[in-house]
Image 1 (cartoon, rainbow, N blue to C red):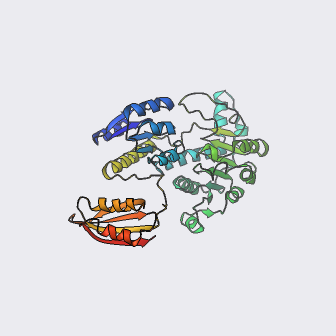
Image 2: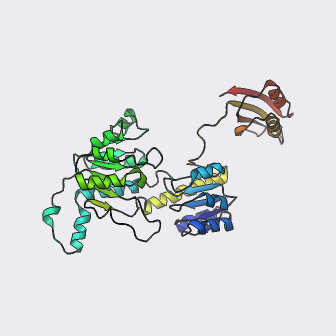
Image 3: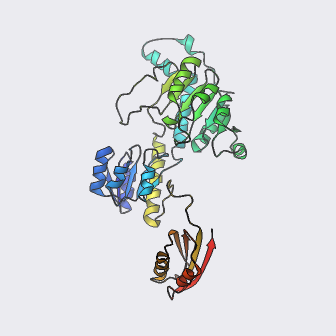
Amino acid sequence: MKILIADKFPPENVERLQEMGIEIVSEPDLKEDALEDRLRQFGPDILVVRSTRVEESHLDASPELALVIRAGAGVNTIDVDGASRRGIHVANCPGKNAIAVAELAFAHLLAMDRCLVDAALDLRQGVWNKKDYSKARGVFGSTLGLLGMGQIGQEMASRARAFGMKVLAWSRSLTPQRAEELDVDYAATPLEVAAGCDVLSIHLALNDDTRHLVGAEVLAALPAGALVINTSRDGVLDQDALAREVQTRGLRAALDVFNGEPSVAQGSLDPALFALAGVQGSHHIGASTEQAQAAVAEEVLHIVASFQDKGIVPNCVNLAETTPATHLLVVRHRDRVGALAGVLQVLRVAEINVQEVENIIFRGAEAASARLRLDKEPEESVLGEVRTSSDHILAVTLRTL
């Protein structure tokens, strides 16, 4: 097996992959055309990336490619639909950086309340302004509004409670019962969260449903002077609407992700948004702690080991939740060569597609049970042919799904 690592990855974990008998090429700076060329030259079975974009051209460059692992939580930098069309697994490492992201988001919260960024910049320029910087409100007793209650949202909630804050939360999967279990107040909509909080923190994946979810209406529902934190994805927040609210109603914002973010490690950007009074930012570093990266690297190793040893991909994001299968064919058979080959040949001639196959071996390896999900019902004559397709067939049953 061969793995191409096209992003930063701990050297000690590269060594552990090599100890598993895997051929490794680790080139952290591969991007765009250079990545495509290296995929074509090396022909890896697995590609590991962190922030590097993986497009259709990259997926086509290595016919052997069977798995793309995002060493992080989201997969928005990977052409998942393209991978699905090619039968390539896409996996990620969810939750492994939750603490790191929550720590940064809460650091932004406290820094905004105390105006620490502006105060530090003034001190750096030799300006003493204790009069203005001693007017913080304080966070005790205020309400943190959370959009998204995955692992990061839950880490935020526990930190807020430790600071004496109330927590009001919404996510598509959150129910009143689950909110009670998590010790947070339940909100039925994002608008309800905005109307009831002093600080709004966004922890949502970016998709068609969440793009600009935090737009003009949600931002207008926030009280004047509220704090907005985004450490998720830039597209979830409408930055133009945010800029208007900052200028007209005194909202303050902290962004770890934003439109026009450079794709390189060092470079320049348009500072217009961050030039607004009350807006601070960081360099998309939510997951960038040693602890988080170590946890993510461990999860990558777990995914690789499972794929290598069992052919199973943990955290795979592009498997079908349902298939067109309408019937389940169960074939009990002796564990002998050709037993299933004959069954599959009968189904092929009958033009019945097998959507999924599972073959379970019984103790002693004398017998097995094959479960085949079919896209249409076999006629009785076809079932008869299946029963007689091999002397090793023990029993055949059909169930409607």
